[in-house]
Amino acid sequence: MSFKVEHEIHHRRFGRNVGLALTLVGFIAIVFGLTVVKVTRGDYEPEQARIQN
Amino acid sequence: MTDASINTHTETQEAGFGDYFALLKPRVMSLVVFTALVGLLAAPNAVHPMIAFASILFIAVGGGASGALNMWWDADIDAVMKRTQGRPIPAGKVTRDEAFAIGLTLSVFSCIMLALAANIFAGLLLAFTIFFYVVIYTMWLKRWTPQNIVIGGAAGAFPPMIGWAVATGGVSIESVLMFTLTFMWTPPHFWALCLFMKSDYKDAGVPMLHVTHGRRVTRNHILVYTLLLAVVAIGMAFTGVGGPIYLTTALVLNGLFILGAISIWRRTEEVAEADNYKREKSFFGLSLLYLFLHFGAILAEATLAPYGLGGW
Image (cartoon, rainbow over all chains, first blue to last red):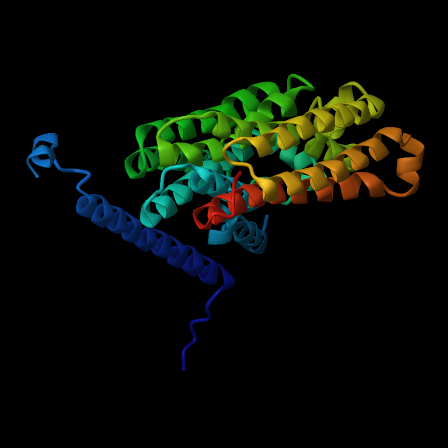
């Protein structure tokens, strides 16, 4: 039997941490997605390489 | 002070994730997202869905960041006005310093990310929009001139231009007209709200038009701006973003909007007070629908154009 009673403040802090974690995960996913799109489109290829291709 | 009272105080100060999110003014952000999306989709250049999604997200974050900076600067008047008393800072959930830090960080972050995701011009335009809203409107115009909402309304009008810039990398007559539509719409929309918010702005010492020049002058201004708005809104139908759907929508909505403005103009303060500002409230409600449907019609024209149905 646990005597540790969770206070409402802990719930709020937990929610804040989960929110921040999800925001960061979402941001990583967006940067990854953008990188894939830009690299596959050849946005970062040097001008010379594009002319040769 | 007892231990119990200290604990209670700490409890009310602890913010949840939603309180920080509320700093970003989610309702204003939804308007920013919608108008920016329409600007992006109405542009002649196609944008990759991933870049479009990320760009709209960063524009929304930039808009939210300027909202947080607005709450940081206006915390004193937000605490006085009934409409804004529930915001995170006056409610004691988030401190001013936190709002400033979040607003500034997200402003820089959103502009850099938009420049990287789309193009530098779009990033710079977002930076200028944040600067305009926070420095020109919030810090300078709002407490200084009754024309605050007229000039400051430009800040809320930039998102469709930014969306257009994401797709094209520049500005064109169509994007300027989309800006003008929101710019001209803001004064009658906001002044109608002021008429039924009664003493809120007066109590806070904000020189809104109805506080400095009276309600009669405000009613006159609503009518004049509504007529000018109709010229811009209907004129847009004959540009690259217009078409039969937009023209029909604009004719109907502007007709209704002008009728509403005439009705407000003809009323005296005694009549308005007798029915608890019923006409002013319905005009305000119509103004929300007005902007949404105009941009919705532009979106419909752009979406149907590839099938030969949209545009002229």
